[in-house]
Image 1: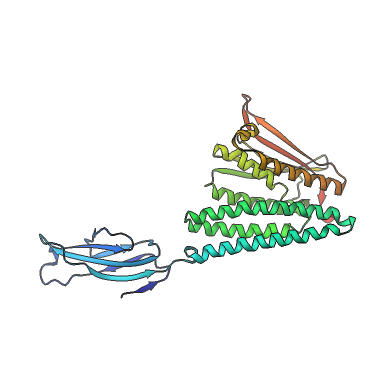
Image 2 (image 1 turned 120 degrees about the vertical axis):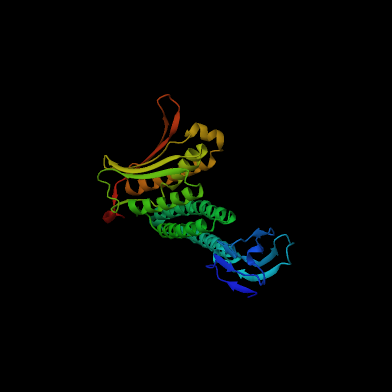
Length: 339
């Protein structure tokens, strides 16, 4: 039937045909071509044509026949059909992504405008505002990198990967937006957000790196509190300036308790800071470290406890660079004592 419109689920098709021939059918030879996919004629010895995983588009299936030692007859149209695309294969999908980006940008801009108005509040609220402002500076930078990852999958026509990526990104975005209104989150909430971020980047870079989370004795992940997304810029540094320049490696994020303080480590086995400086300008890495330091200072002031950020360059047995280790020291804040 000409002009048949087939849904996206009908990607595998089978056609059976038979020539009207009054003599011996064993002397007949068949060929077919699927216009819209290719122009080349192909043999059909079984008088059955099968197509699998056809892409969306308009197609015309032609068949021709000849008797032995004869020339090919005129092509006959066996079928005409349109294979409809999935939603993720339509321009509407790309438009939807653009709309999401626009809405996020508009929401972020509106939030920043609202944050500026809070500067006129009483001095008692100034400390809380500073924490929220720092999170607001982190959020656009974080979302920008994540949206770039989604765009790369779409441009490369990796439909299944882009769908999976969007699902994970939606979950991450909900967490980031929720955490942006909180001064502190539990260690477990922080870990879940960081795991989503690393899973997204791992998908983007074809799983060229590994990552692990570790917890020391006594770390109550659902009771201890830390600033939201505090470690994300440090992990991003380890990824972009540590393991990715050598096309692979491992990032380890760990939490431990020592001397009534929460100790966080972000460790990689990458190229080291010296080599990283020759590959990049280092501005982004410095900004991420500066942002983390500033937030630590504000937390230390709020809880009247010491905080610190220390970076150690790792070396192997031969004294060669073997990665970077960042140690962050935080006050030990429990959920039920959260101010």
